[in-house]
Image (cartoon, rainbow, N blue to C red):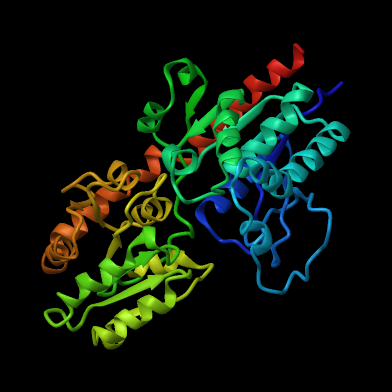
Length: 402
């Protein structure tokens, strides 16, 4: 007689048409658990259009959003109608907005969990964490709240999520009510109160090459590479400013920025105004970053903060030295200054100085690139996914005693 496999629901609110790092980690973690014999289901609550950008293999993906099924080939739109967003945050209206934007997600999720009860529910990112705790707790189903940013940025006074005070209060309380919370870095524990520390588990992102090593290895080009969503927090404008200080000294080098986002037009205008020509390019998105990592010589990441810095870690796994800012949480944990990269101050001039040192000294950047490869051992998928499986199985035992 075979035992019933562990059953786990991975829940995220938005997945359709999104290609962010958190969405990729979400899918890859679910895939890894399924590969280990766990019965995995992915639940989303998404009225956005488009297809899931990451292959989910044989895992069932169920969209709980009840009202419409968009054409999968149309561009994604925002989940929350603008008319709801414009409602004031006053006490009464705050509750109305909560009901319109979150309550139906919770009720729909609870009904699904009642009909198909899992052993553990994993909520990724704040909206899903809140929904999972409020839906699963009454059913005595253990919940893991999986945080993929600085906790302060997701649950403090940031502008990243719903500004409704009702939502903010309930999102933060959900962390307290969850059976376990995962964070990406040890330092992130300090944000939580002492009484919650026993429930905080540090599980970083798994890091590996994103494509096999070509044989023979490609020749590295005189390219500075940057990857990320074109938003304010990534601060690619500083990279453009830094390159403005460098490009005439190194006319055979170029900068390539991969990613899309709301700052595309502003960055394009900045590049044109700086008369950088084709020496710096906005390259859009690509599903094939592996060969691009392998052909570049330097990786630059001027972000203000990161939950982990997944693209930085991936670049390192491909043997690239990294230049980033010393105060960028998430990146300053991955970069060992002077060993596998450089940590510089927060200005464009300091960024350009760091890039110059690697451009002018091929031996230093080659040695740093070799040192960067060890990140694949520190955050090896086998290590990270074993931590996930162990936590899931421990929490499943808690359900069995209810």
